[in-house]
Length: 353
Image 1: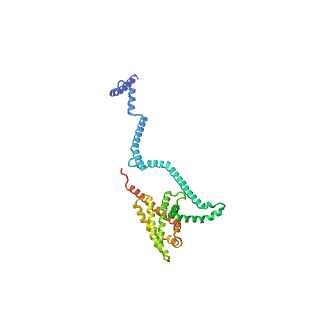
Image 2: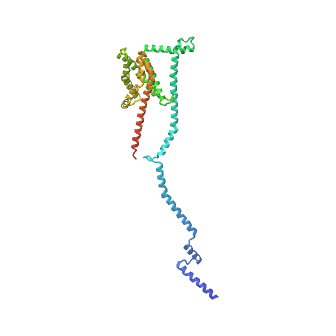
Image 3: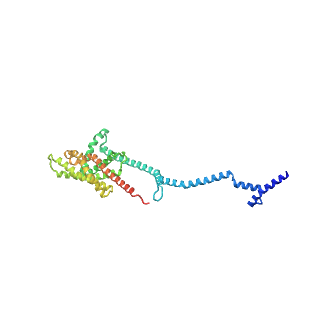
């Protein structure tokens, strides 16, 4: 037995010795050396799992860095196009719309409200003055009069006052009537175009009234006197001759004066005025033939010379409505065409980058 134990110990030491000598770790114990060799040969599964997870995370992060910025950049460029200077269109538009929405809407509403208040004040003020003048024509004789007597004699006495004004200053009286008629006619035209009653354009109405006051009243006064001297006859053909002369010569002259003066008051160029006159001359002349020949049969056949302009101005309420509507439609159409041409030219020539 002793012999067997000695042989076994001798055999194990002989196996360990070459390993120690081959690894040149003579100072380490055989147990530690064997453990180190086993650890190098078979690393732990936990360490392998950790290392694999780390490499997978690094690889996925690298792929995200390679792919994600390109896609987001392209998508952002597609969603938010840029101006040539690099700013976003959506940001610029949103900021401008916010600024406009914050202050512009309120200012427009305030301007419209103040404009309506001014227009209502003008209409009510002039209406009150006119009605009071008409009703108080006999205020010096009202003592003991009833309201029925005041209303009864007001039309007759107003007519007498008008005839006295014609004798005192005929041109000024006719100018005043024409100015009032042309202002009211333009107001009716604006209401006919769809504007509210007190939302009319004061500048446009003032232009039309100014043309009626300065030109129509005075020129018509001298025209009717010239027409009477041109046809100083009492035959049956005189009235048709006056109507034909009126609807050819005088209508062509007055329509041209009206459109030219309105264009000058709108500060338009001479080329635009000529283009508008050329486009509207014949249509407006022929349109007048549907109305004025029937009215002028009464003008030249029934109405006395000094009262003709008053009758013509009453019919002018209809005719000025047609004239004003037609003139302003042409002007607005020309402005819209100019804006469309400007927009098309700007879109066909984009800004260079």
